[in-house]
Amino acid sequence: MNKTTTTVLGIDPGLDRTGWAILTRDARSVLSLRACGLIHTDAHQELPNRLEYIFAELQKLIAAYGPDQVAMEQNFFLKRAVTMANTVMTRGVIILACQLAGKPISFYPPKRVKMMLCGTGTADKKQVQRMVQLTLNLDKAPSPDDVADAAAIAVCHAKTAPLNAMINVKAAFLEKLKAAKQLQLKKR
Image (tube, rainbow, N blue to C red; front, side, top):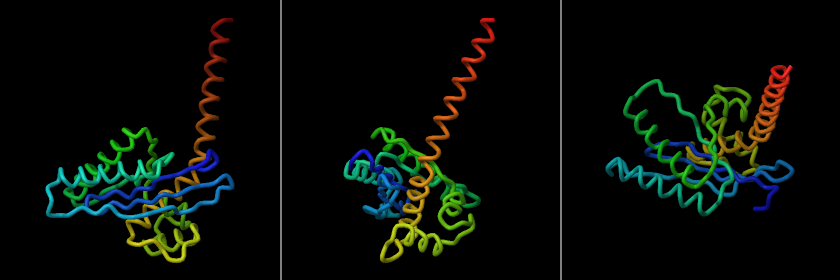
């Protein structure tokens, strides 16, 4: 990809099914879905083997598509401690793979992704799938929902990251300005 194109890897983490999507944003901010899929692990395998498989598959995706940035769903759990623990471990191997590859990773709560994409934080799976389809101008909605969620997370990141970066630069500049002003006051 050229320098005016940004590639984002969106991830919906899960031990059984981890959805992923590769999106590009060109110089005109046009979003395109390059690829998407599912990393599926066998429930009969031992946990370490499943985590290793997710890690290895993610390394392959990063090597194959060379994303500039990674966006992952920030999970909130209200029930099922076993599911929570497995997803937290899955997130850990995903974060490790991204860190080892030198890819910055951002986290988005599901309600923020739904709000950005659908206009409401309470959108259901079908609404998210439909909005991903419309936003990316796809012939059909991505399926299964883990893949659609990964694409939605990537869209959310691709649309909000440029503004967030400008806000961070401005905040850093204001902090330096404040520090310089305080230094001048101390010298008086």
